[in-house]
Length: 329
Image 1 (cartoon, rainbow, N blue to C red):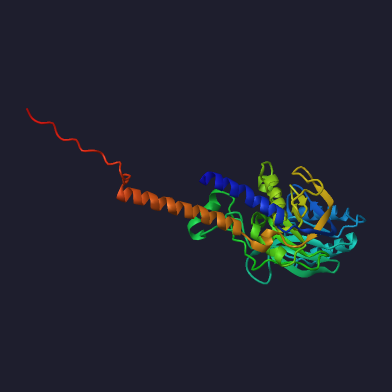
Image 2 (tube, rainbow, N blue to C red):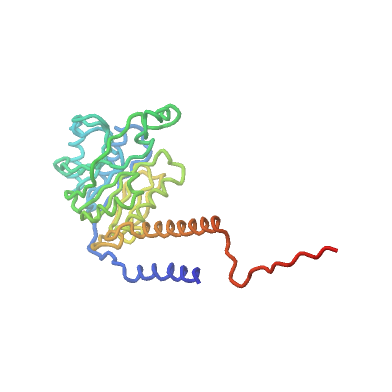
């Protein structure tokens, strides 16, 4: 009976959620271009390739251009020539750019990975600093104890700095919530951006270290989950692939740019309004499942303890009869 009841709950609860959960409502479209330079050595060559590919988008009526992670390897404050080139690109294409700066800032110590909005007049002032860093890849946990990892692998020689809070950018034509690479693995980041009013999620990524493995495809697929959870379309733009776009239900939009590609692609991205059940309620389903498992484990442990301490009691009326000892002859 317990198994049947559990099976019924497992069937009925998801069915009820499917039937009554709030769904995102269509609210127009936006044309987003993704620029993927491909495998290019050096920050200057990477910037030049991204610039050339972006110039080819002129006349294609795009609303936003998204570059991948570390697409700009210099701080724009220290390189005004790059700021001017990006501003000219924005004016030439007729759309704002979302680039990603991986550089040391002149106003303080440390290296940040930052999503930066750029318009026809240069950087707009909106900058999002990556908050969740890749262990060992971007910082070494407990470096005083594990710093030796830098000598045996490709661990970060210097810890990257963390941002303070997520940001929804208003100067990109559509309210955009940027994420940087590893952050697309966390559902709560997309939820926070959707609650803050983001109409579009944009992940800027680089997985060139794993170029010939399954990792780029798996990483791109995470964007489908984040889109379905938040009810917001998501753009996954990378340096070397796989770049992909998903609609507000997690459905693929257009084709993907694979790891063998160097180019730019334009996507007609459907927008949506309204809040999904996850945006409204958060991780309650996971918490409830974990609580149920812990409760069941606690009940089982208590029963095992009581059986071990008190032994099994014999049911009434089932006492074994005591036979008299045989008489001696």
